[in-house]
Length: 211
Length: 198
Image (cartoon, rainbow over all chains, first blue to last red; front, side):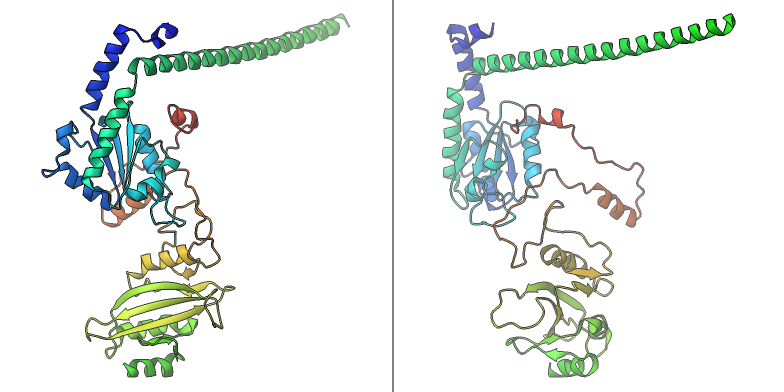
């Protein structure tokens, strides 16, 4: 089944086209703003630049309802586990934009407390330069991300995921079987010991009564 | 201003810091620090009722420096006599990293002393809650010491668990905690499923 789905045909490609069209035109960002880049993002979102023109209408302040994790600002080592947890809470499909110099490379904070780029923690799709980066740069990053999403194939990803899941299920069942076998072996050994003990007792009793 | 320094010199055995050119700085012996600060705060002729800042100093690579390696510098300001400021300095040797706390006199000293403890490793005796404040709990060493390599980075594995502290603070305000929360460590396998760490 998985081999057939990997080959593109009319149905899968048109389904891919539809899914990608839907995804590109409703990218809901989740802003993880820790510094001045977040202020630039605010000005991108409101009237003058208006990010909702390209479909990023709602800024969702929960990772469970959003598609794009927008890391805008410096990430310190104390914050790194929080950011990672946020990324793990997001549902598939998910993309990450590193906005500004600090999120992309640590910026000028070359010291003991700053993470040198968030790609040490989570995978990043688009990087934006600037300190802070301008709204125009942010728009270009969104267009790049849209181009990237249009090249993705939903059916292919799904087939790969199903394959992975099947492999995982097989491995888990094998593990469970091995555990059950071991358990049964232990139990039979115990029972054998029990029976031999009982036999010895009976033999002893019989000898006693004989005497 | 000179009178403050003279009084401190005569009463507490302090010495004027010759290296400070722009402000009144006095080096006080460690054993008289608490008494001197109490005098500065409560005496009607002084009334230094504000602790502006508290900073640690490491003289390891300082040119032409003699004496103990560390110092703690306290900056005081008077709100009742405008324009009055004075700076006290305590010298701390590396063998004996202990300084009496000022939290009983100034509430602002609490977090400032925690910061100096975090960055320099100087221990403030009698502090109610001496923990790290800026660096994370798994950090090893004190980063603002001159012998700490400035670009040495240390990873934190999980987030800090701060709920007991929050509950304690709420209880101090008069709230009642019905249920205590426990830290739940994620099961490694479940946590890693679908993660990039694999």
